[in-house]
Every structure is written in structure tokens, then in C-alpha cells.
Length: 391
Image 1 (cartoon, helix red, strand yellow):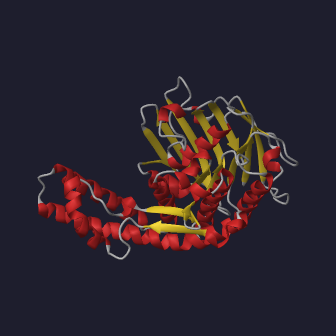
Image 2 (image 1 turned 135 degrees about the horizontal axis):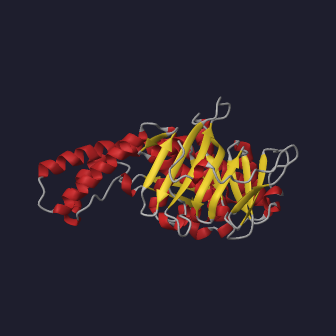
Image 3 (image 1 turned 180 degrees about the vertical axis):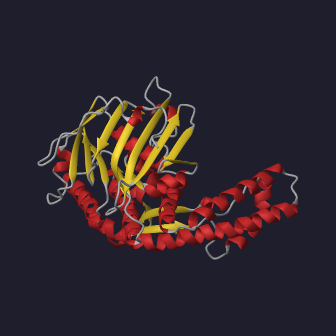
């Protein structure tokens, strides 16, 4: 799916922005603090019901306002009609209202299905330097989009481990009740682990192929290693049985998918400890691009890439290589930079599907292109100006 229309209201310094006829590649340029990244945040809000910069909803909302809204139209290539409308409103207290095709929905998963997003920004380094939680989230994003049975088992696992840990913390538990939750946890946890492993096996060769283009100097020393969260020689049921004493003593479940991790190694050492900052960014790009490529190959459609300040920490040649890979995937891209030449000079010349937007003081203006028209300014009676999401 790709966005054809985007309306933003009260997202940071973007009080009201209306963008139509979005291209496959959309470049937003302007000075720091102008609102470029906020455009990407608004798209992320539309696809994930939250920002990619921290968990505070209040900071996302324009100062002095009580809510923010993102509305858009998403359509698949070759799809007849206007596509599917998506809308998200977040209040300062954290409340959320989500609509898909004009109907309220409770699950963020419905948004993710229609607008799968990949973010490449400064925080993406956490895939290498951050906690295992960031890497599990990365892995689960991919599994969710290629294996429709995964979400149900993941949700079941989350419920089971929550209840089991609650019993373990209680102290005076009924052994029979603990056994029931342990049995259900073993079943769902094993399923989650198998789905992750199957996806990881498909991801590795695509990741290595992409990084070989971006960083050929790494050669055969590059390794992507997956740890499932318990001894790989044992079933999850056996692993739980072996840890039950420690679980009871310390009041939580020690083994399982909640302890899974992915590590990128160079000659047996962590990439985060070996590579330069620029090399790390290329490895992160490889991880993100590999997921998009695999999703497309599996016939699950293309994801949309939000790329914030690509030229940062990359030289001209490596920026060009990343752009060539993005262009070859045919995915929709929203990318920011300070000067429009930063991207215009590295994006493949033969690719004509590029739209340029100048961002200044929260206003977004589309530049005229040959055969195109200047983007109309937002109307004051735009539906996005209402307090509720457009149906």
C-alpha cells in the first residue's frame, strides 16, 4: 500500500497541512526545526497511532492544543477507486481514536496491515546498540507481515506470561493453576519461536546480499545470529520445566520468546563495537531494506519507508547506493534533508517519480515540476480541521 493523500492537523509545528497526489518518492527539505521530521511523524502516527520519537503523546501535539490528527488515503498499485481511508486522533491524555475505511477500530494492527512502515533515522542505531527489545520489535514486525497466524499466537503468549508471572509474584500459588498457565505458555511460546525462526532463515540471505553491496569490505565476516530465548537443543516445554525453581524463587519467567535477541557480528564481534558510525548506519539500512524486500517477495505488498536525514553520517557514494536500492524496490519513500540537492544529486536520474516539498515554519509547499502544478494551499474548511477523524 502507498499513501496518495495526507492531511495533518496540530502535529508539533504543523498546524494544518494538506498534501495530495503523493508520489512514489517524496522529498521534504528545509532548515532544521522547520517541520520536516514532523511530517514523517504524522505519517507514522497514521500507520502506528504513535510517534517514532518517544512515547509522549503530549509532546507530539501542537503547543496549546488538546489533540492531533492524521488522515490519509492508502491504495495498492493498480487498485481501482480511491483506496482505503485511515485516520488517527490522539489526545493529550493519551486517548486514541482510530478509523479504517470510515469505521472505528480498536486494534492498531488494522492500521499496520494497511500502511506498513519502516523508519530509518537516528534512533534506528538501537538495532545495533540498544536493548534486545528493539531487536525483537524489528523481528516481530517482519513476522507479522508475512505470517498471518503469528499475531494470534503472540497475543496469546503475552496473556499467558502475564498471568504466569502474576502467579509467581504472588508467592502462595496453587501448583495446579501454575501448571495450566505453564502448559499454555509452552504451546504459544513454541509457536512464536517457530514463526520467528522461519522468518529469520529467509531474512538472513537477503540482508547479507544487500550489505555486500553497501559494505563489500565486510566480506564473509558478517554474521546475523538469532537467539530464541532458551536452549536451542531443548523444546520450550522442557526449558520451562528446567527453570521452574528459579521462576518461583525470583517471581518471573526466565526463559522464552520474551528473551529472544538478534545480533549482528563482524568476525565474531558485535558490529556496534567494531564498525564506525557510518558503517553502522549502512548495516541498519541493510536490516530495514531486507525486511521490505522479503515482504514484497512474499507477495505481501510493499512497505513505506520514512527516512529522516539520510545524508547524515553517509558520504555521497553510500547515500547514492542506499537510494538506488530504495528505488529498485519500488517502495514509496518519504525522505528528509536540509537542501533538496542532498537527495536530488544521489537519487537515480532515470527515476522520474519524485516530488519535492519545501518545509518552512510548519508550512509545506510542493515545488512545481515539468508538467505539474504547484500544490494548492490548505483550505480552512478542510475536513482534517474538525475535532474528530474524517470518516
